[in-house]
Image (cartoon, rainbow, N blue to C red; front, side, top):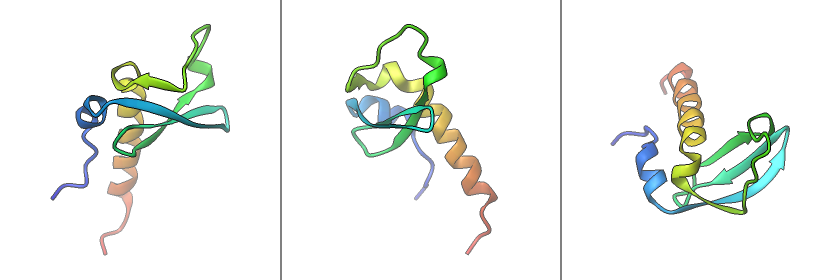
Length: 78
């Protein structure tokens, strides 16, 4: 069983829901429960709704999934 985050599964699962705004980021949660940030600096003049289609946020899901995966790889094996 792989612990790798499958971005495609999170995007296809349905809408992402806004969770909170903190430390310069909007935090969203996928329908499968993965939380990821959207930096305020990336927003420009765009507006972000409380619910957004996963495909619209896929780049942020992928970016954070890569960060999580890199952190896992640096953890010592138990």
